[in-house]
Image (cartoon, rainbow, N blue to C red; front, side):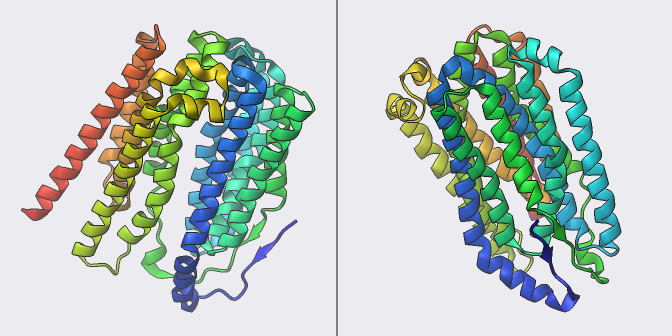
Length: 413
């Protein structure tokens, strides 16, 4: 088991810690980008090898896992902040216990209601049971990664993320070569989580009195923002599985994966601008410049990717998933444009939250719940599903931009 240890940590090390963080930012972001691309590789390999119907089943597991990722990220943020607070060992011990309880509850939820979930989503119960097993350690894994993050152990953190993803990619390729199915793929997912957790234990440093700079903000807004984002980015995938045939649901899953590629790329790249934006040592002019540079970067990536999806949808779909998914080619650009709009919203809400403004958080949560409600009403065709998402995205983007404009107008007054 890998052990991360930082003994003798004191407040005098904080400037060094900041320099270390800055020097490794590009390398860490490059690793995160590689992780996202590898996850796309897993989905592409599975989609081409399994076909739309079977891919719809495994997409249910991947979507539920994506929702669980939000929970693990929440624990990671909590652990990163708790690591730098007084009495951090006791706080982290308690946080680990809570993470194990949440993981066990998830496992019981999957196992106890496996029959219900399988009949609801049209998949076998075994993959859901396996997912429950993996989630037991997934939330504690978030705690360990948060400790690594707090200590600027970006090499350990990136390596752990890459280990999880590469095991999944290699396993997916092996499963298809052996002619196995959805259950084997779920086993690979569980194996990747267990391997990442077993090599993740991080021993927290002893944090001395670090003053008010380490008093972390309340995490309820962060959890609400993640919940809203989870509704927005995942509800359509699960709901389409309920209402359409597995073949169409599998094609839609491929549509969602390709369409969100621009979202994940722009969000990862914009992290560079965001890190510069929230630095306290910058002047107001520099912060404003960084803000508009970040917005322009996200918009540029989104527009270019959406136009690419409009100009060559068949090439993208055949290259990533194969000819069986070509029926969704005509609406690929629409999904890409919707996801690009959400990328802008995500940046603006993150920026507002960093300034202790929670309006965007509540707007995101309301939009996520509203999207689910509207989809329940209007889901007769895939076009209806996309129309609902476009309407929700435009409404959310407009209201978040309006709240930002009102805040800037108030500050100038």
